[in-house]
Amino acid sequence: MLKTSDLKMKEVVNTIDGRRLGTITDIEIDVETGKLTAIVVPGSGKFLGLFGRNDDIVIGWEKIQKIGYDVILVETAAAGDMARLER
Image 1: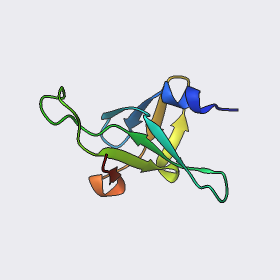
Image 2: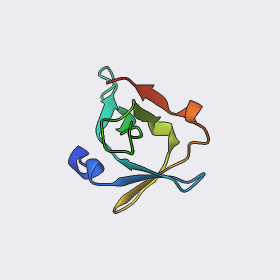
Image 3: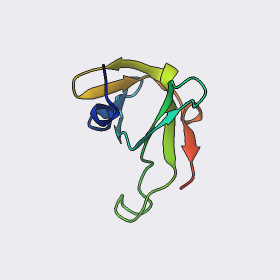
Image 4: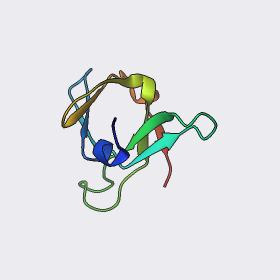
C-alpha cells in the first residue's frame, strides 16, 4: 500500500523529455469514488525561480507510468496535457 506522505517524497520526471517536474505538492481525489485522479507539482518560478511561482501543474493519474522507490515517471508530451491550477 502507498501512503500520500510517501507520494510527496518522490520526484516527478517526464519520460518524454527527461524534465524533472519537482515533487508532489498536492493530490486530487474523486470524492464520489475515493480514487486518486491527479497529482499536482509546482509550476515554474516567476523570477529566476526564487520569488513565487506560476500556476501549479496538474498531471492526470492516467499519465503516470511507474511509481518507483524515489521517483514517479509520467508521460506527458505537451503542456496541453498538464492542466494548470491558479493559486
